[in-house]
Image: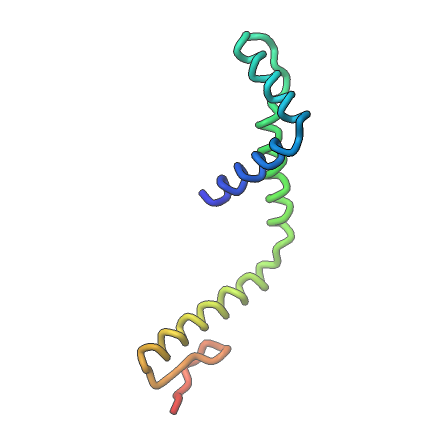
Length: 101
């Protein structure tokens, strides 16, 4: 859902800043209402372009770095719970519990 909201915001911003896109979109909508041949849909093209860029960016993500960051975040949350609940241990960087005094 968040991706669709991001796409909508990006496409809306793109159309708000471009009079040419607004003009093409309006002409396409009028042609569709009249039943004549419309050609390419500028709104559809803008969404497809957004998702193509997102897919290219996702291909550049290093999964090992993502996993490491997720693990560190999880350990930080676990240590926060352990400290808040006054446990006698915390987790080190490897994920092993260590006694605290």
